[in-house]
Length: 268
Image (cartoon, rainbow, N blue to C red; front, side, top):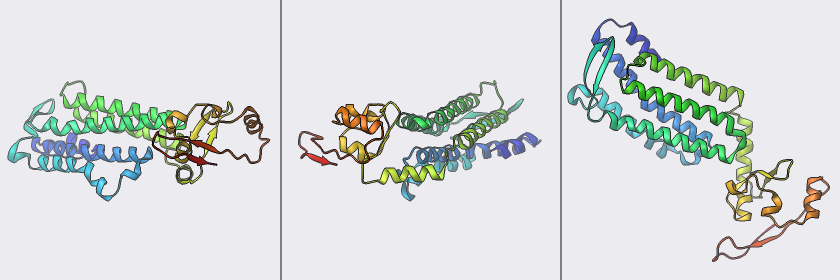
């Protein structure tokens, strides 16, 4: 996209400028879709993405690319281009139909990242950086598409690319967003057959794996930041020994019903 902006601004012929503007527009939705796939993977929802589901989010961008390439035959994306300090276009009937998909992807990114921040305190600061980046780039994108005249098309692309590059670089390098060791540890905890609880210095649950939540029949989100004694029937002596690291091994048997129709569950 940045290369297209450079070539469009350096071109002197009007038709060449229009060609590079179309080239830039063609890659905007595939880029947004790729970012959404990354966000889903980062949030631990990669299990939803396989060869089949990877193709589904790209169907609309591919269809949009087809309409853009063949626009001269139907004018459903752009009806006309003219020169007004820089190249300006009038929108066709399907222009905002396809562009609304970009905002839908932004909403998916926002919900996914907020969910991750609620479930994992360690991800909150990098998630805040990424969400802020997403909001800024969507605002700039909207201003550009509305032809408000506040920023030129080339400037908007460079601004979006610059903000995204800076935000993701800080998240990647400063907070180790893509850390293979952390990813392997998280995957191992998620696949454990035993319940695993992480307690902070105050005895509150800071993290729990799915088996631990299933043992107590309480969602993972609801367990976080609660004291262990509030969700597990432990007497004061056991809690004191655990907090003082005086108990090498403690066995606890739980008998309870997850639902009214379930049989009793016994976990140790």
